[in-house]
Structures are given as structure tokens and as C-alpha cells.
Length: 258
Length: 292
Ligand SMILES: Nc1ncnc2c1ncn2[C@@H]1O[C@H](COP(=O)(O)OP(=O)(O)O)[C@@H](O)[C@H]1O
Ligand SMILES: [Mg+2]
Image (cartoon, rainbow over all chains, first blue to last red; front, side, top):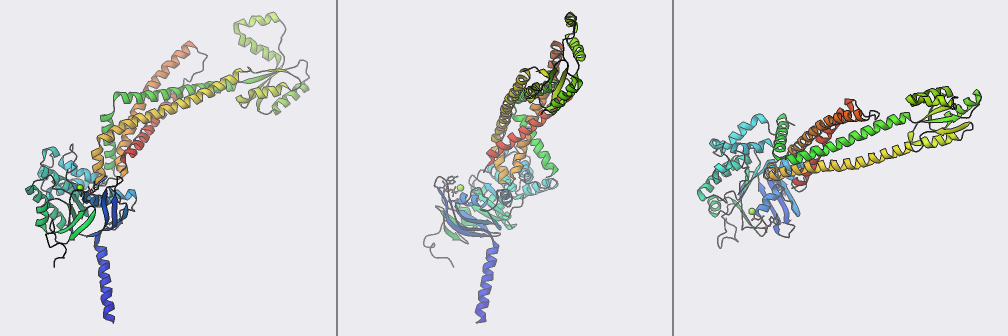
């Protein structure tokens, strides 16, 4: 039956294409901290190029561990992590800086340098990667404009609101044009209106082609976006919905929708 | 590496060196380097003296009276053939008397009392290696026709032994002071590392290489070492010239180094050492604190 062989071949080609399209791949990854705390337990998952993914789950579920594994701030105790074709576990330490130029992070506490202006904070991230000094000014102003803060370029973090500080940290993260943006509870310290502003910004960045992974506790944002949701609990993936809500509704969980 | 990057390293290193250096740490660095330099000067002078002495150390072999010229020639050949002998010069009894007169100076009148020349003919023997003077002298004294030998028995060995001891002690003390400088510079830089922990964290986060993070600290160490060495070098140069003037006024027969070149060379070496020690301190300490 030549037809069956063709179908089989087409399927395997699709399978291979899907594998190639995977920007991030975790193969039975576990992270047990030296004190015995479980960060992740036997996690197998993938994230495609250009996706927007929410990482939800209670405190201590392993969301931060998940992200820190992608930038090699921690090494897994078991399993392999592939990011954009690079094996994060096996790479040489000298390759780590280049991984981190492709995978940028933003945080709940912004991690801005208080003695530098907004402009300097963003420019700093570009300079330490030895970017062409002629382009620094244009690129920094472009990314400050994208986050809507070009007018506050000279302000110090202490003179900015929480939402504005998070925007500066986003500008710093995207100024190097990363492939992946990891946002660890970026709206954790912000009120709902400001949070939606930040969400809008992250969506815009995602539309430009950057893959965004966001850990959050913010139920209304997750429910309002209807994007892929990966739910962690005790270091395990307990749910992975393509168009999910923050919590699985009663009676809806076991049966896959559609 | 881009020019802008090099400029950044220099500016950052210089700025934090200025911010974190204290009078005490800079003073200690300068003082340690000063002691190091002073030690080196003392050793250089001892070496200078010993070289002069070694050039001067000779064995005088006195000959029995009434030897025929052939006999004298035979003894000369035997001395020359002795292991460790560099040069042999004949000193006739008249020549010997003239030299003695010169050495006695105003007391030369005493020789007139003796009347007849009491000195025998002799050979002045220069040895290849001052350490083996006694050995060579003993061998020469066994040659038939040699009345006896004279070479300042005991003194040479003592001088050389003393110098060796001073050299070893100097090296030990120098090593201690090098360690002290590295430690002080390292500690100052540790303060910078701590005060910049946040900045370093952000730098790593946005993908700065380890070397990029470390260079400013290396520069800071080199600045501290250089400034400390410059201060100590100036003090050493001035101090040495004063000391030389004092010593030559007090005891002109002590052969100290008076030429400025070796002292200046020492100061340059001190500067280089300061920079090197600073770089080592900056590199080692930061590497320890940078591990992820
Ligand atoms: N550096 C660490 N050392 C020891 N245990 C840690 C460390 N980081 C996280 N953990 C533990 O790992 C588990 C997962 O933590 P984390 O990834 O921070 O979860 P989340 O971000 O979802 O709150 C928790 O039990 C936490 O206590
Ligand atoms: Mg967390």
C-alpha cells in the first residue's frame, strides 16, 4: 500500500519540523536543591518560537526554578535543557553570557541600578555586551520609546513609579533584541491598571517575534488573555492548556476541551 | 576589544580606586614596597662590595730563599696547573717591599729600622671562585719550594657566609611583603566588589562575559599598585641619595653604589612589580567572588 507509506513519511516529516520549531525543550528535567527542596520534578515540555506562555501555580511550585534553568542560573540535577539549539546543561561556562544575551529576564523587583538614570540603566545592558558604541544612543532611545518612557530618560529609578520602573527594566531586557523574554511575576508589585499596561507591552513585544514566558499569580490577567497556560505544583507540570484559564474549572479539568 | 570598552575599563577602575582607597591602605602598600626596595638596595650594595672583594681576593704564596730561576718557573707552572687558579703574577721581593711601603704610608719609616729587605719572593694567585679560596691555598702550600701562603684566612669565608644569610633572609622578608601588598590591594578591591554586588549581578544577567566584569577590578588593582610604588619609589630614590651622602662623608672607604642608574632601574622595577601585584590581587580576589 504505497499510500500508507506516504502518510507515514509525511507524519514523520511533520514530527521533525515540530521538533525543529521547538525553541525550548526540557527532557525529564529535575532540580533538587542541595538542602533537599524540590524545584522541579521530571518535567518534560517544549515551547515554540513566538509563543506567549503563562507559568502559574502556588508559591514554591517551581516557576522561578523553571526560568533560572533556561538562563543557567541553576543547573538541573537530572535531564537536559535545550534553548534555541543550545544545550544549556552541557555548554561551557564561557558560552553562558551569550545564552543570556538571547534569553533576557525581568523581575518583580525590577533590579534597576539606583545610581543610574533610566537611559543609563538601559545603555548599561548594551555596553556590557560590547555593542557598537555608535548605535547605543539610537537603540536605547528606541526601546525607551517602545515602552513609552522616552520622556523620562533622565530620571533615576527612585523618581519613577513602580510601573515606570518595570517599563525601564523591560526596555533594558529588549534593547539587545533577545529571542526569549522571561518575566518572573513582573506585575507582582503593581496595581491592576498598571499591570494591564505592562501586559499590553509584553504582548506587543511578543508580536514582534520575541517568545515570552511569564510567571504570574494574577488570575484576571491570565483569564483575560486566554493563552497557553502551564501549571506547576510541587515541581511537576499538572496542566498544560493551549488556551487556558488560571484555574481549571470544576468538571472541565479531566476532559480535554474540543 | 573595542576602544570604547578599554576606555570603560580604565575609567571604571580609576574611579573605584579613587573611591575605595584609604590613606591607611595606600600608606601600607607604599611602606611595604619601600621596605622591599630598601632590601633590594642593601642586597645590591652587598653584592657590589662582594664583587669588589672577590676581584681583590688573592692568595700570596711566599717562596723559599735562594731558588734558581728554573725552580721559580717550575713552581709557577705547578701553581698554574692547580685546579681553580685563574691567574698567577710574580712579585719579586723588591716589588713586595715597594707595595708594603705604599700600604704603610706614613709609618713606612719602620722598614728603615729593619734595614735589609725581609720579604721573600712571592706569587700573587687569583682564584676563579672566591668560595674555594681556602682549598686552593691549601693545595698551593703543599707545592715544594713554597714557604707558606697568606690569604686573609677565615675572613673571606665569613664574609661570604654572612652575605648568603642576608640574601636568604632578605628573600623571605621580601616574600612576606609581597604577600602583604597583594593582600591589602585584594582587600581594598573586595570592598569594591561588595559595594558593586548589585551591578555585577545585573551585568551577569544581561550577558557580560566574566572577563568584562573582571577587567575594571584588575585596573583598580594596577592603579593602587602603581600609585603605591610611585610613592615608595620617590621616597626610596631621595632617601638613598641622602644615605649615600651620609655614608661617604662618614666612612669613605665603604664602596657603596653611587651611580644613579642602578637605583633608577630598581625604582622602575618597583613600579612594574606594584602594577603586577595589583593585577594579581585584582584578578584573584574578584575571581573568588564572581562564581555564580
Ligand atoms: N536557592 C534555593 N535553595 C534552596 N531551595 C530553593 C532555592 N530556590 C528555590 N528553592 C525551593 O525550590 C522550590 C521551588 O521554588 P521556586 O522555583 O522559587 O518556586 P516559585 O517561583 O514557583 O515560587 C521551593 O520549595 C523553594 O523553597
Ligand atoms: Mg518565584
